[in-house]
Amino acid sequence: MTGGQLMAEAINRLGPYWTMTRSQVYRELPALAEVGYVRVGKPGPRASVPYSISANGRRAFSRWLNEPTTIGKLRDPIALRTAFMEHMSPATLSEMYADALEQHQEALSEARAISKELAGEDAGASTAMDFAIGHHRSAINWLKARQK
Image (cartoon, rainbow, N blue to C red; front, side, top):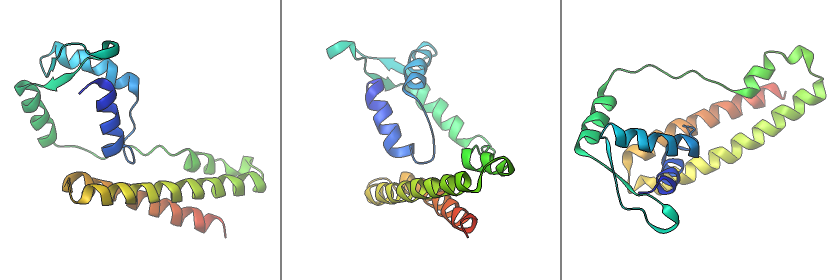
């Protein structure tokens, strides 16, 4: 796959619960090639370069998947601003919560649709999508409680 194809696949499979940028993908691919984790193919149209995972890359991926891990740190701009809510007008705070509620409802619908799409073809990706679904449900409940 090319960097663009990898990015599109990553957004589809991981986007609702993991952020990444195009620049990260394009920066990491040559670095992965340099250490032998991916092979570089022949450039195609518009100088697009396909990559494929190598045997070393598969082993490194497997090692990474099986390493102990810790939970990630949550970074949420609504929670951050809420920590300083005494410096906000009630109208601004209410509008922020209403906007966030709408965004989480849209994201929940999107995550449910992706999960349904993946259910028959990729059980792992579908199960991971349950995390995004639960996150958005929780955020919606938290936001609704703030609006009372």
